[in-house]
Amino acid sequence: MPVSVASARFVLPSWMIALAVAVLFALPPGGPAHAQEETAAGSESETESHAEIAELDPFREAVLTVIAQRTGTAGRHLPVVYEYYSDPDSENLWVSEGAANGKARKLVEVLLTAYFDVLTPSDYDANTLGGLLDATLMPELAALEAGLSLALLDYTRHISAGRVEPHRINSELEIFPEAPDPMQVLRGVPAAEDIVVYATYTFEPQTPQYVRLRSALEAYRALAQVGGWPQVPGGETLKESMEAPERVTALRTRLEMSGDLLVGAHGGEVYDGALIEAVRTFQARHGLEVDGAIGPNTLTELNVTTAERVRQIELNMERRRWMKDDFGDFYVFVNLADQFLKVVELREDGREKTVHTALTVVGKDYHRTPVFSEMMTYLVVNPSWNVPRSIAVREFLPKLKRDPGALAAQNIRLLAGERDVDPYRIDWTSVSARNFTWRLQQRPGKGNALGEVKFMFPNKYAVYIHDTPSKGLFARAQRAFSHGCIRVQNPFDLAEVLLAHQGMSRAELDARRAGGVERVIRLRNPVPVHINYLTAWVNKDGTTHFRRDVYGRDAVLDEALKAATAG
Image (cartoon, rainbow, N blue to C red):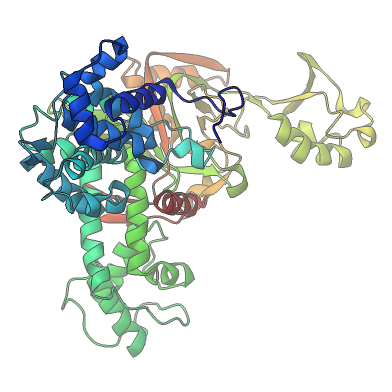
């Protein structure tokens, strides 16, 4: 039964309506052959839009028919591909003189090997398109032409901006990757001398970090294909000079396979010498306490399977595609999974150099620090701490109920607006989180929760980098203890590096610090701050590093990528 427009529950996009009209006029009952006759015969009663479509050759009309019939994952790019092939001046890209051209064959090879970049060939109908390369009939060639264009757009989007949109799978990821303009991608094909270079190297992340990670993936996949490294048996903490034949043998093989121990560098059944040094290297690569002992944490990381490490690298290649290629000429980079900060500057030769590093403390699992980028615009020396209301009612209100003097012990003011309030004059037994109307502010000083300096890059999360009086936490291997902000080790060394780019010396900084008075230092040249979450990466020296998924974000991404493939 015909469905009236008035009763329809949806509105077709304008491009689809135009496409339906084009197909209706260009391909009347009787098929492509009859359509050619109708086009040749012409009709004075045709509309202006029909006349424009009629200028297209039969092959182009067949391509439009294929596009009209496509559904599913290619839907994102259907409007662009339709627009491209509706233009009589645009070139056919993959079919020349009645056959698949060389670019078509090369692109199919790219699609079939997409797994090298952790992409899925089936997402691009690679096998189906490969089966059409020797086609001679117009409908099949039209399917090849349309299919390769759609596949190219999906592939270049995925390799440049990732397969999933980070902010859609996790609201804590304030990242919006920029995919290439699809029309420009298509229009660039005719001029591309090498379609392999064009489709891959032109659009993949233009960073050495991505290239190094891909090389590591190839090596770890090769290890997995031969069965991977062995599991190391458990037992009491393995320490220097202990004899443990089975454990030492398995450990030696394990570390040889991962490249932490040179083959033949250690022998025997005693845990000593080169094997201990190899364990120290392994611990450093995995963010563990570097003590050379095989305790529970080190054993857990040793027994993560090769296949699991492969997947960890794959997930982080997706994350690398989310990132911008250009972080700036001088920037701060924080890796939450590593709990580590570095300052990087671009040298005259175009290469990046790390000019400062520091350990950090990041948010607890239930106060996870988000991923985002912002501009640092000022520092505050000897800052006050305006206690967030959530912390005030959850942590300080119970203390006030027990002892109204609890605030004074921590140098904290109780404020109503800007007016000080005597906490002893409040009946705290009648106060709850709902009717807590005061504001808490901790005065500057050694015991201030923010320490003696904070680094401000205003953002919607109210996250910033700051000093801390709890210096002992930096000695721990795992440092997720904060309420979401980032505590940094040796904060005035960081301030010195940042302010040197603003023309301020350490002596000037120390002078402003002296006296304990709160002072704001504004940056003439704002500094980009990039807060990221990477659980696998490769350093310039070629060492592959892994970190625990402290926030469970690997698991979320893994599920999202599996769902994208299944969809």
